[in-house]
Length: 384
Image 1 (spheres, one colour):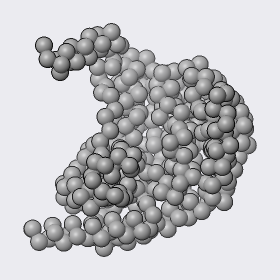
Image 2 (cartoon, rainbow, N blue to C red):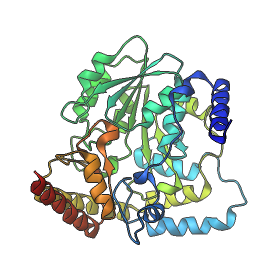
Image 3 (tube, one colour):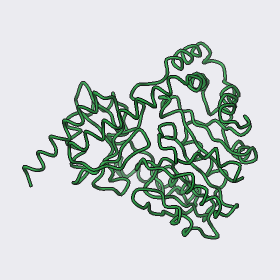
Image 4 (cartoon, rainbow, N blue to C red):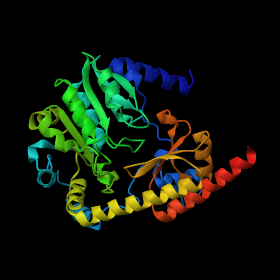
């Protein structure tokens, strides 16, 4: 038996020990768009790469956040506050809820997984609009639950499709608002209609990772709906507008009994002290957040202009990314951009084979993107 066969045999034996649900999952294997930028540069053999694939804040975190995190470096030998009381109190005060209605997690991803761990049993059904963020499906499968995909309509979450998919086995409905990868929003009227018709024994989870970028007044805000529904969990993160993606700070807002259920499965020291300090300082730096919001909105309009020039249609976005139609195989456009040192996200993994999801980067990086897209269009016209 050669080494490859031996590894395969051991993997098979390990899966026999694992819960059967794990056979439906694969370990996360990062592809080019998932790599940190320094690895991208090594893989592509380039001194500089423009990374527009991960919806990161290209301007970085608040200087106050960096200073706060640096002050914590001398205390790395000491465990942090396990519940992050200072940060929870600050968030609760601004959102006009109680601190016990807040849970801190290691990014939004952990909170999604904890939600599945706390509430799902094998054969429960989980309604997930599609395409959307993949962690909802993965966490559901990990618990042996059955994801029920409901299609978007015109790239928007369709409330009627969700209601029609309900069954006696439905346990959770996941909503991403604004939705990833489309950048579209659920309006408050639509959310109200869903809440009125959704059975109370179904947990409604609204992931608002991109809510801070929204400029559309009609967009729903899950926190405002807490008074209407007991089984409602709102997920937010410091990874996007706050620019603290590597610090891994997410948080959930709900009613205290639901938060207590999540606390039962949460590791006690899941959120590190450096991240807590940076998140608190960033949360309090309202001026910096407003600056990021305005920059993103301005750069988003600039990206629209570049896409129009390249004769690419797009879905109007309320996030820090735009879903654009490349008018050809997305993998082809992705490769051409990568050859020029620009990394975006192909829509193929979302079931959108002609689309690209493009993070809204700095204006100078978007300018370079526009030049390459224009060259791609000219090249396509010559070959047609």
